[in-house]
Image (cartoon, rainbow, N blue to C red; front, side, top):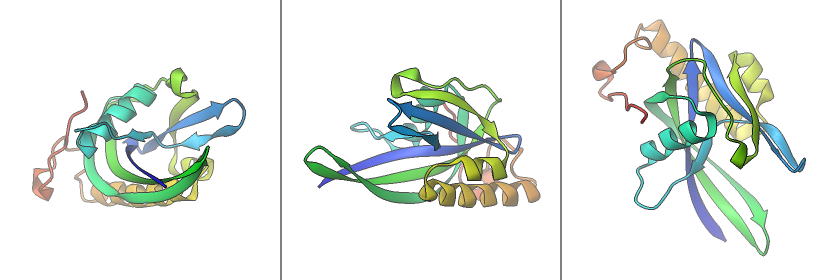
Amino acid sequence: MIEATSCGGVVIFRGKILLLYKNFRNKYEGWVLPKGTVEEGEEYEDTALREVREETGARASIVKYVGKSHYSFSVPEDTVEKEVHWYLMRGENYYSKPQREEYFVDSGYYKYHEAFHLLKFSNERQILERAYAEYQDMKRRGLWEYHKYDQMGNGAVESR
């Protein structure tokens, strides 16, 4: 068994969620949230910001950690057990450009109910539910529009 760790983001801009569409040789097709593998010596927050930026071209800042998901998949002669750490992020605008080298062929921002039904994997739908509930709560309390969240004790982390 191979253990792997990835980090990703639920990026929200003006209430809409950023998704990617992956098409790998017509074997793997579907909408996903941006995420990727932690590089040696890299902090999880830095991985999440880097992967969002690399896979979507979007600039975002971390608002807060929303949890982790687990899944496994087979590779030749082994099984990969993957743990993914997820962050709620605020996008700077609606810009996105899918990373072709990773077989992403489309990207865009979608309303919550659209994003929920488009997502291919149930574990990503669960993370989206959690992140969007946090977003709604923060918006209701007037905290989403602030750039820093000093009142909550966790300052936003800027993308690079």
